Each structure stands twice: as structure tokens, then as C-alpha cells.
Length: 91
Image (cartoon, rainbow, N blue to C red; front, top):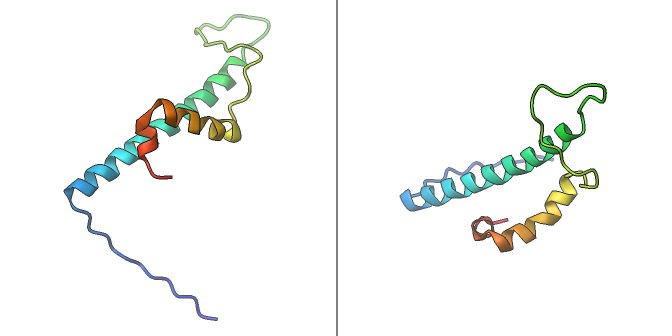
């Protein structure tokens, strides 16, 4: 069996390039927000018990759930309703 792959070159015009850059910026910001949420959750749970940290750390409540992939994925439709810029990016 022979498998063929095709490569197509796209040449977007200036308005399409601007739209693609806007979508990439929105995706970058939403990814960084999700990553920061995860890192904050981890940092709030690794405080040493026998001494205080020299740096101030953001402490989340103990009942705040782990911001895993599925929780963040389920929160995305709610965020799209609050922030129309997220809804502008095609899924």
C-alpha cells in the first residue's frame, strides 16, 4: 500500500495575516492563563510545614479543585460567554 502526502502552500493577504496573528495571540493568552492557574495551585500546596517561606506565596483555599485538563476544558465555554474575544477563535 502506497501512502501519499500532499503539501499545500498558503499565501494569505494582509487582512488574513492580521486575523491569524490575532487568533494566535488569543490562543497564547488563554494557554498562559491555564498554565499560570496550574502553577499557582501547585505552588500553594508545597509550602514547608516547619518554616515560613522567604518569598510571599499566593495561597489558594484548600477546597479549590485541581485545575486539570478536564476542569479547564469545561470552564472554556463559560469563559467564551464572558469574553467574546475567545469565541472569535475557531475551535
